[in-house]
Image 1: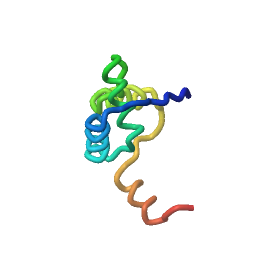
Image 2: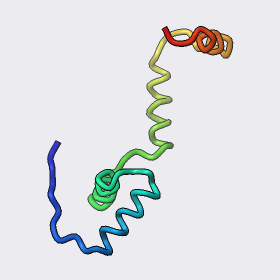
Image 3: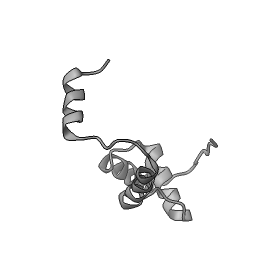
Image 4: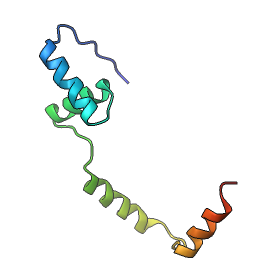
Amino acid sequence: MKTITLKGIPETLYRALKRRAEANRRSLNSEVLVALERAVGTRALSPAERLAILDSLRQQVHGPSLTEEMINTAKRRGRP
């Protein structure tokens, strides 16, 4: 993964990024990456897009469907 060093960031821009990072519960670095991805056209997947991909993968998996009973039994047993 590459690294970029930014110099001469205006104080108002820095504060705005810092506020956005806090509001989105991200680090400042992560917030800057999100802003850059949006600015250049690459972006993270939306929740709907992620769900569509997961649904597609789920259809490819062959095996028994989990029932509520199976889940509750596993919860009662706890972690191995």
